Image 1 (cartoon, one colour):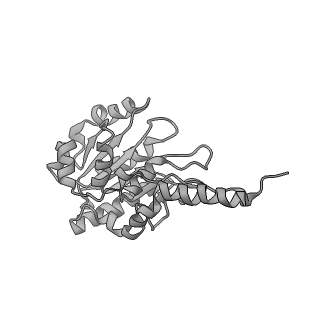
Image 2: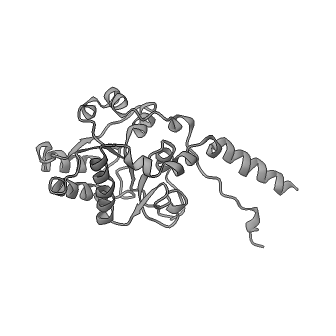
Length: 239
């Protein structure tokens, strides 16, 4: 006998309360945690990575390197890029960024690789302009918690496309999907050029404001998910 599909429900991760803060006072937050970024009021692009083959950082690095090359000609803004996480490939990319090209070779990108305190990570997400997710699911079925945290912070996400990711990142609703470096670069230019035109670092947040507000609402909390899908479904199963 097979499993009765009517008896199956999916329990989704939800943002915890500290990520649902509504404080987007970028300069104040950044000046407290990463003061060198606050000086220029830069739009912040943030990504969290395991620095392993499971997350191909070259997709992001190559897109940013090309952004650096075209920024002046296309009148794109200077940006701050924050990469959190630890892993085996971190030293390799740190060398590519700071030794091979050198800090003087980056005129439009200010890099930072902090190891943030647990209390500071939600604050940085709340201050950022765009989140980038490089998670590539080997099963095609798991959904990255880092994206839950970003969306829970009201941060739109540019995510690597795979089988089930649209259960979390819905194109043109709360973010965008990309398949390669070229598509990621296109999306970065799309949103950063509008930041430059409007002078508003939170332009991307405002484009997806309704969906992001719904995702981070109390009605979309873990408590509601548990109550509706576990307790509620258990009562149905028992009947």
